[in-house]
Length: 252
Image (tube, rainbow, N blue to C red; front, side, top):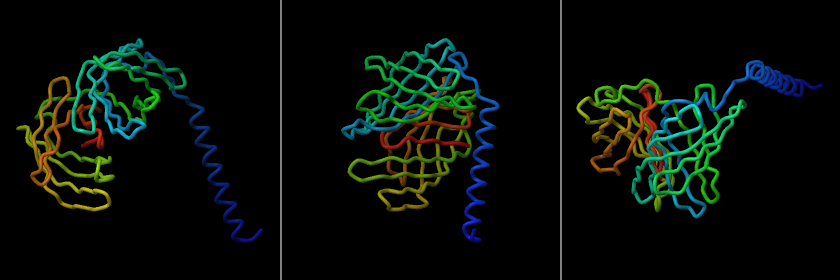
C-alpha cells in the first residue's frame, strides 16, 4: 500500500471508529421522552411558505400540560406585513423515541399539523406536515424569565435570514442595547441580495408584558421597520421574533 493510500485508509478508519464510538455513546444512554415530559410554557418561531411561493412566518407562546393538551397565543406574520395574534388550542404527543406530533388550531383559522423531535434540552424541532405548506422551526422552554423592560435591559446579539419579495435573499446581524426605559440602540450589518451594508445605526422601542410576550418597533438608519411581536424564552436569555421575511433571534 502506498503512503498516500495508507494515509487515506488511516483517516477513514479514524472517522469510522469515531462514528462508532459516538453511536455507542448515544445508544448506551438513550434519552427517554413521553407526552408527560413536554410540560410548561414554550416560545416558538417557524418560517416558510406555501407551495405557490407565498411567504409566511408563525410562532408564539404555547403551554403544554404534560397530558397532551396545549394552549396559548399564536402569531401569524404574512408577507405583506400583516400580523395576526389569536388564542390557540391543540393537542400533542411524544413517544419514548422522542418523536411526536402536534396540532395547533388558532382561533378562527384552520388547524396546523406538525411533526416534532425532542432533544436533550427539551427543545422541540418542528416541521409542518400539511399539504401545500413548507414551514420549519423550533420551540424553546420559557423557563424563569423576568419579563419587564428592566429585566430585558442589556446588550443582545441579533441575527436574521430570510427573503424580501422583489429584492431577493437577505439577512442581518447586530448588537443592540435594550434600555430599561423601553428604548433600544445599536449597530447592525445588512446583507441584501449580496450587497453588504455595514455599521448601520439601529434604534427603536420595545415593550413586554408579564406573560413574556412583547412588541418591538425597530429602525435602521432612521427608517422604520414593520412592528413585530416577540416571545422571551430560555430563562430570559433569548428572544424569538417570528417573521414571514425572516424570523429573528436575539441572545445575550
